[in-house]
Image (cartoon, rainbow, N blue to C red; front, side):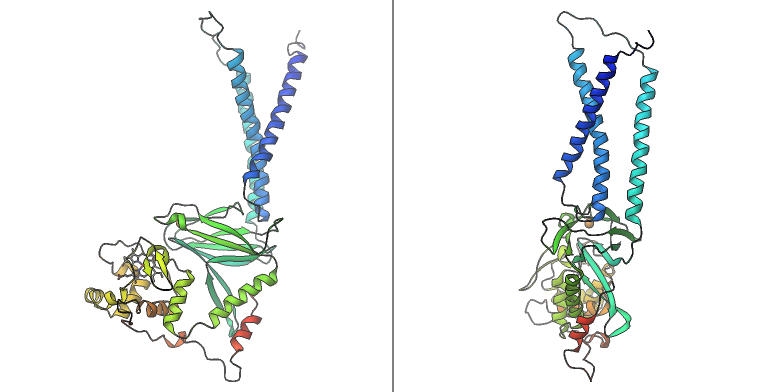
Length: 404
Ligand code: HEC
Ligand SMILES: [Cu+2]
């Protein structure tokens, strides 16, 4: 009697149902990721693999629960003329133990697998390319550094609105926010990491070749933490070059721009603003021949030079140049009436800040500069060394190897 209490028919049914659940879960786990973006990094493959395992388990449980539900609706439906209550059932200890033990085992297994993937992503890789990421409402900027070809004892840094790298090179991002919490999210890399005020957070990935991709490949970076009015526009790009040589060609071109900025501070300032490495365009309105900004957080900058020389000078006791410098360097020191203290302290290096001021001085209604800026001596474009040809800085740039 005991041995036949579970009939062989029940056992076969359980086995068939079990196999169907696993096959169904497997189909769900393989089909769902087809709608995902490409896997552009080694980590994205690990994460998707982990996701497929979780989805297989979740898919099988989904089919089990829905299956039992539909089966019960059909099997235990009320028959015509049946108005009685259902039989009273007071729980089952065996069932409770089973449905507690199985999820417990699943959770422990997923914890172990997740921890393995997490620690492998976090692990320090050999020869990492380090890039500083700055998030500020509503812009991303990437800062690269390399030994200065003019004086290799110091570093030369430059900013870009794009994150450049190449296939196979491990990248380590050091991320800082200049205002509120932002979240660095690249769907193609599958990782999402917050930037927290007062802390530096890290983000590691290694780009891999994607079949059928044309290089340099571009993948979008989005801010995934609601951070204000233009949060939805806080988008940038990762550019993955196919080879190290392609990457270095881009890098040298950027170094070259740093070594040879326009001598005229006005042009230099305009170039900095046009490059959008600082988020000014996301908050301010400005309409000139070269710059068209449509922010709605800060005051319009057309005519700011006139105001700096008149009403602002009266209110602050500063000269127009000093007022403009202060409004960039210490934005909270004087608030334009009607606006709150939303402009962040962007930590713009001196030479760039003075160049931006020189450009702002030209934003007058008449078109004639309302003030002028003499760049401090260390900001003047370095004349080529006496013994070198005028092309020297360009050549030096071409030889400069990025800090690899
Ligand atoms: C997050 C939004 C935001 C960003 C980014 C931002 N600003 Fe502002 N800006 C403001 C706001 C708001 C004010 C008005 C309050 C104040 O005076 O600080 C302002 C004020 C100013 C003023 C004073 C205008 C006047 O009429 O007196 C200047 C000049 C200025 N910003 C320039 C810049 C420049 C240059 C940048 C980029 C380097 C920049 N801002 C980035 C929001 C921003
Ligand atoms: Cu943001």
